[in-house]
Length: 183
Image 1 (cartoon, rainbow, N blue to C red):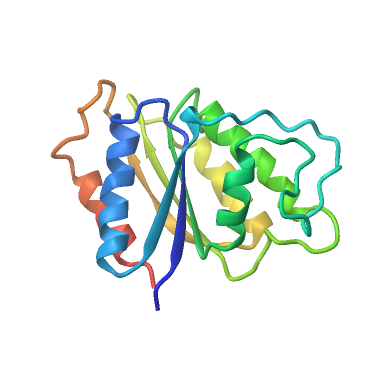
Image 2: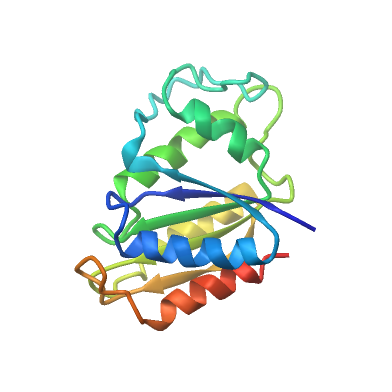
């Protein structure tokens, strides 16, 4: 059965190492008949959450702020899988990705929680200059637990400081295989 996959790409580089992981994952997912929609967050106008609790999940645009999250909300609402992709910045996801994830909270507010559960799944794709992923994984695991999404796993590619460093590394094949394995 074909799945709708949304990728939130938090890299600031369209042709960077994180984007290479995204491309490999996308090729794998599409080869299995899935539909993939990628949002390159660095090129979008997304403001930080105001913590106003004014959102409402039943609205077409659930957040009180009007910005490019209005393009992401319907895609996430209709998705089966949400992939979080980011370079590792100070042992966490990039600000671009964290901002978008924070703003997804609007889908949990109001009458019906459209984010938690719903049979949704997620995967994590990350590239880094170093190998310090041990701090970001508990956050990701806790987020999956809170959202009640199935954790499909992660591909963590360390040792990739310069653009193109990831080329030829096994993590690209792992990302492809992860995309291909989605059922």
